[in-house]
Each structure stands twice: as structure tokens, then as C-alpha cells.
Image 1 (cartoon, chains in turn purple, red):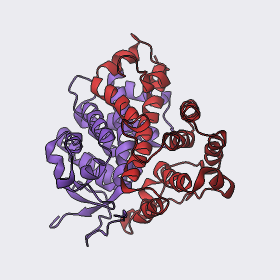
Image 2 (cartoon, chains in turn red, purple; image 1 turned 45 degrees about the vertical axis):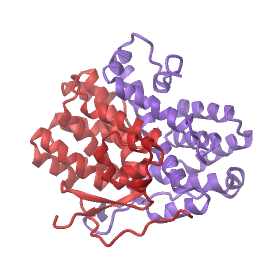
Image 3 (tube, each protein chain N blue to C red; image 1 turned 30 degrees about the vertical axis):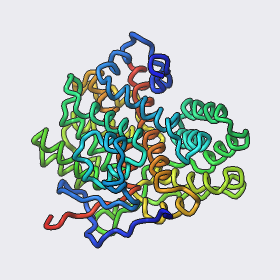
Length: 202
Length: 200
């Protein structure tokens, strides 16, 4: 069969950044569940991801998907010191806001709000963008994430110094770097292989 | 391979065993191991499929070059030469990089309140001479890669159609997208950790 672009079903395109749950519609054919080998299934890492068209599309290169997912989980979920989970999610949301990934921003803004209990500040980041004033510690994390996300990089010693003044140790700064860097990976896949859609009733 | 394999991020940052950055990376051991496993999956795959080693390293050199990451671009350039690519392909990667450099991220949003943030920028089309040297399949890839690097929010089905039309299968496009997206991560980790290391 010749490979083709998928025609996405009728849907509502979100036109603003949001913390609401969104769908994601693929532009390329994900693997069919019943066509997936053991290797494909194992590459999902979490068995429940077989329901996700995004992960079944990425499973076409299973070694890359599995390594991507295990990298992701350690950067965001490893509980050993460093940056609190809420602020790893903040770095992910700020990176996604700056690159313009509405889908990624929705997921990680929700996580940042949940773990920080600072819904108003997280919403301000989505509404006003990466220059919103969120208090110095969050401003420093957002500014570092944005500088590292620019191409070419604008990340310099002044960002390290500002994060240290805000109370981050070097492990926490390395967590900011990894969280922002990882969302430069994730944003590019999400933005270029399909598109977000408002969920029914949202 | 493990045990003797060089960790590419460690090598590009210049991390020595027992150094402060070595200790920091050791606190996130799965991220360290699987960043390297991703590199292996994309640049030394067990099953290469239809994306050749020269194609993978040519894209790697182009992505790093577009980031202005000179040392990383040199690393992928050296791997490209080792992969059996012709000297003219290496020259074409350098020529494309010189043609295509700009600053990102830019791009457009769906019409609505975010339209005020729309930012114009280059939609790269490979120059005639460079296209000749790259060949149609890599030329189509480089145009897509440039969009992914600098203005990913402009992505659209038509861009994927251009790749399909140039001979990239759906699975090839997933691999190509992972290469660009992973390098966007690797280059930033290297840049960030080098900066942190320079500020003891």
C-alpha cells in the first residue's frame, strides 16, 4: 500500500493556549493495534498507551520510542532531590508556550498547576506568554527555559547565576536544562505529526 | 556495546569521570542511559529500515549546524564521512547550513487571539546547486528539517506530503522526525551543561 496523509475528522481547532484536556489527531497512519508485534507493544513502555494514536505512530520506530519514553520519565519523575516536580513541569510548559505547541502546553500546564497549586500563575503563563511575571523564582526558570529553546541558543552564564540566586542548586539547574531540552524534542513531534483538537463538550 | 560505548553527551560536554557534572548526570541514570540509547537507535540502529546511515548523519550535521553548535556539527560531519558518504555530500550539508541559517522559533498560529504572536521567517527551499548535490530525497528532508528546527508551529500535512512524494515512507518520516527532535534535545543538553560547567 502506498503511504498517504490521513484526512483528519471534523473537529474544533483550539485557538488559544489552555489547560483543558485536548485530543490529538494524527496526519500519518499509526500502527493498527492488531498489527503490532511484541517489540512494538514493549516500546510503548506503558501498556495503556496502545490507545494513543500518537504513541502507536511513534511505535513505527520502536527502539527510538522506548528510549525516548525512558528518558522522559527519568527527567520528570525521578524523585531524587533536584527541582520539584511542579517546576520541571513549569519548564516543560514554558518551552511549549514559546515553541507554540498548544497540545504539549495543555498537558504540562495542567501538571504544573496540579503540583504547584498555583493555577493563576500557570494560566498567566498560557495567556500572556513567557514574559508574564510569575515571581522571581518562576521567572528565572521560565527565562532559562526560553533562552535554551531559542535557536541558536541564548542560554548563558547569566541564566545559571539567576537560577542560583533563586535558590536552585546545580542538580536543580540541570533538571531545568533537561526539562526544557526534552520539550524541544516532544514539541517537534507533537507539532509536526498531527494536530490538537478540542474534546467534545470542553 | 555497553561498557565500551562512548556516551555522546558526556563526550560533547567534556565530562570526566568523577567530575561534578558526572555526579549530577549519575543522579538521573535512566535519562543518561536512554539519551544514549536513543542516539544508538537513531544513528546505529539494529534495523536501519530504509533510512541510510549517510542520510541520518547528513541530517545530524545540518541540524547541529542550524543551531550554530559548531563542535556538535563537526562530530556529525565526522560520522558522515565515516559512513561512506562522498565528500560532495559533506560539502552539500555545509552549503545548505550556510543557506538556511536563521533564528527561531517563529511561525503562525491558527487564526484567532494568538494571531498577534504570528512571526514571519524563512521558509527554506534548498538552492539549485545544493539540491543537485543532496539529491531529491535529502533535499526534501532538509526543507522539512529546517521547518522542524526553526518554525515547528508551521507544520502542516502538506509538508509530510512533500516527504512522501520524495520517497520517504510513513515509517521513514517517523525516524526522520525523531532524529531532528532528539537532536534538538541533545544539542540543548550539551549547551546547557557546558554553560553550567563553565560557572563553578
